[in-house]
Length: 477
Image 1 (cartoon, rainbow, N blue to C red):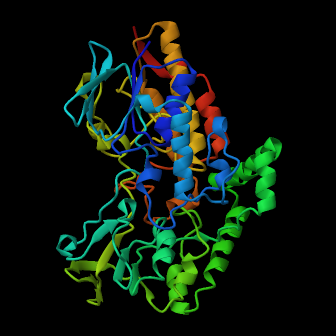
Image 2: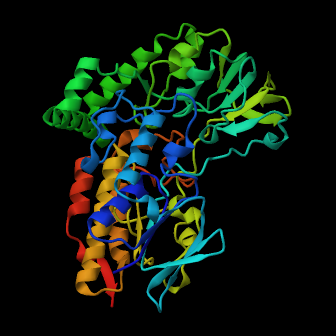
Image 3: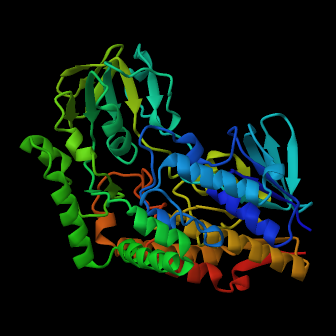
């Protein structure tokens, strides 16, 4: 039976481990750099952190959670769900915590992966699964002088809860997913809060939570939970396709209505995007816009020229004094597994192969790297990622079973399959107007290639990952 090493104990690593155990595979190790499981939901603990996908969709189909306390679940509750899964399914004996993967090399002769760890040890496995995800490496902006700032500097994904913010002059660089959640939380205690925005976002109003009666009914009636899940999934799938102009117009109008609470007209205009809905990931918040009515909060949309020991300097020379600098600048979303040195057949290196942008088949496999599978890989981001991760974990297990049944040492994606799949994928992406407006965001590489987004709904992704595709792979005995 083949040995498996999984990189990462977030949702992808947990789901893959569960699927392996259920299929009878017990020889696997999950390597996790943090001190516990949960992935991005362990790292991101900033005030107000929550999911922007409806909670009813944010659980695996085999472990549906019916008792979420909010329509959009908060970080502690999601982390608890993932931790409970790891315990419930007996994964913890397979997990090596506080351990970082330094690199992985495929041995052509032995038909296995050698995985180097930061403690100097090396693991061997016939199958390597990357579950590093999309939101794991914080993006630190290269702003001149940032290293000279004399006060505390923290990225929102590495929140310092022991850092006092009361009465401090706080500069927040960034205004997207994390900022819309933590800025309203810290604004009441800040002495002065300046938000530096590069590009405004579409921000939908967060719907009211279920009433206690609704929550009790859903929790106690599996049929009602299924119906609610299907209803929400249908709406999310329609939004994911980005083709229903009437639906997109309604969503854009909802965002514009949400912004009308901003009292200052100039501020409201600068918070309002001038690009099509969906050009960047739409956000969800009921308190982002009202925060800008506070007298201690201001919005700056001029570019940042540099940072000095006690201030942020705008392009026009304006000086914005600051005691604390918070980076809400997202993650290195376009690198995927290439952030780790990975060497495949014939010594080819993944970061070289992906120099012009990450490419994979179904976001799971790529040519020249046998028995390497990716969870939340290139162009799989859309809808509820837990749904897509589950599809990917099922795919991994299915191909492992095929290798066992056929006595195969390895499978490797055919180059022509990779090329054809990605040519069609990019044609579909090009046919979505909102994704091709030139607006900045995390979807694209510096060269402009969209490497993160899946251009359709969750249902189609499940259909494609479930379809037999043995012919897509070269094999070796």
